[in-house]
Image (cartoon, rainbow over all chains, first blue to last red; front, side, top):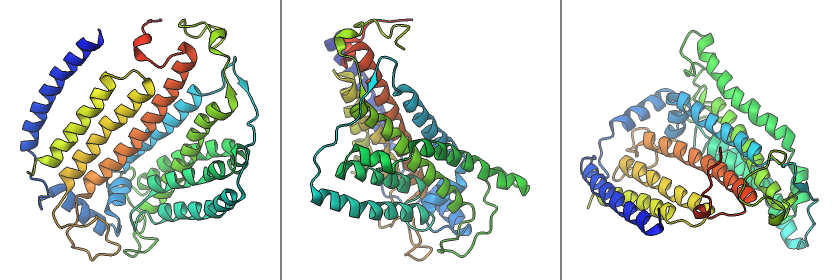
Length: 258
Length: 114
């Protein structure tokens, strides 16, 4: 199909979508309405389980089984990226060349690295109380670690990033989420049901199972994102592909190369 | 115009799909997919909005304060996480395609191999 025909098909489809979507929107509750039946019930259930951050309560308590699936998607994606971006047999690994580093940049990076990691731990740890949680804090932790790369260079990052251990931690944290759900089964309740003591509302230990699942997710996201970014950085910094001409063009991977 | 926030979501979706349809670069196409997907965030948050309400976190406000719908916010969180992981996986596929076929233009990737 040439470009013109494809654009025409898109325009027709877009017109149909626009008309149907607009019609559907007129049937939605009005924007800013004060009736939110599901929202009100979720708020009630979260208060009952002593969890101040209702979004965390929905994710790690009321919809915990959905979050287990979401977390498995994250784990699978990290695994997939590691497999796809591994070093192929016809590729060489070259030691990264150290670049020139400004002392002020180095100082700022060294100063901010612990602060950023602390903020990440705080956002994970207070997930059941204040905005944030395992997913958000995990990303802060993982990207904070890469200040070592931004402010210094790749060899420094490799020293502060134990990749093999983080891969194992990622798997262990994903397993911990699954195992935490068994607490419900042991006490005779449902899988992933919040059966732990609920604690005092708005305290760090409140929410029963929520802070534990939250921490497991935080560890998994942090280590998973570090492993994921490491694959892309490896491709950019270390792995040297053979020049384009040396590979069979347009014939795909030859049997011995893949 | 209470329809406007919802229509904005539909517009973002169409812009993203248009980018994918006309894309000449696979990295650009992955970016457009992320744009199309972000329309769902706007739609979900628009559905959950409540006038004069605050965030659904009761750490600082007394219980009973009107808050926006926390269910859709949790859905958006799921959406963001899945979107980010899918983008990462697609980009690693793009890297492999560039390595094996030497091009990023989807028009040039015509050969079907079994």
